[in-house]
Length: 75
Image (cartoon, rainbow, N blue to C red; front, side):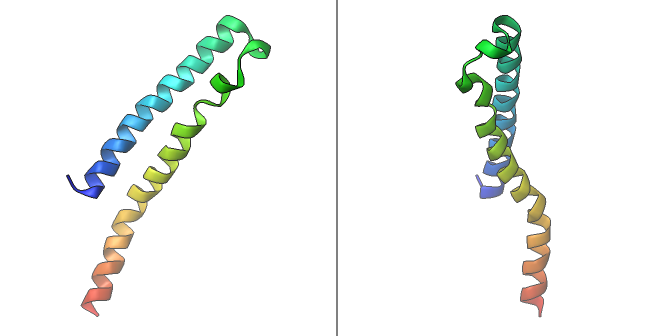
């Protein structure tokens, strides 16, 4: 498996984890109220969100990096 495919699959699974943590956050707030929700539940979506940011930026910049490497080797 190439690194690019690994990043894509990692991004997919991380997005599922992010969605589940957000749903769990809403359920906890609905059941316990905003003031009684532990900070661990409140901040749990942040880790998958940052991982999605970095993997998404990597996938976004890949075509530009390929063009840059191709132009550099051709010159």
